[in-house]
Image 1 (cartoon, rainbow, N blue to C red):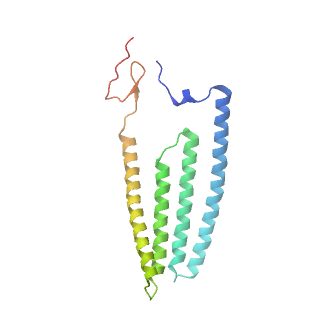
Image 2 (cartoon, rainbow, N blue to C red; image 1 turned 30 degrees about the horizontal axis):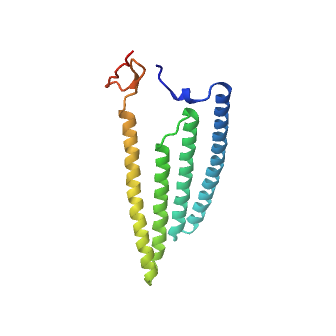
Image 3 (cartoon, helix red, strand yellow; image 1 turned 90 degrees about the vertical axis):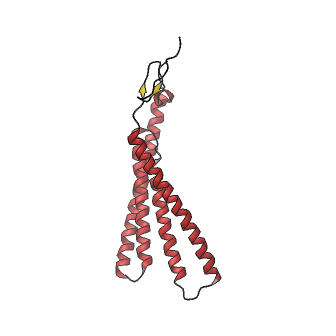
Length: 186
């Protein structure tokens, strides 16, 4: 019995190549739109940075520039994912974890800026206390989420480098080199 591959599950002939062409065209269009979006966001970050350089007294402008640059970084990582998907016709989870990690760090920066503005007031009210507690809970959850994502990325990279490739054994089953597959009985 021959081994099954991903190619055996694709439609054969003209419909398969048509689907692949449409898929590549959609990926290319999506990549083009993301490129334009990334360039616009980068230009906006540059303009914000120019404005922040004129007024060094406000921390909010610096945080806004960093937040915008992290958005550009997320868009570039998504573009990398699209390029990889077009080349290999597979999706891997590591780029999505990296985008989620960047988004989480970005959110931490926004929360930090907002909490600095709330706690900077001279009068502490019960509303400030509620906002502060909610902010601390959200920061705690985001911190745990960031740790989990970093651990997941490390485990994915370690498993990718440590796992030997599968080998076709007699009888058509795929095994790792250290394992044996029992051939099917006739």
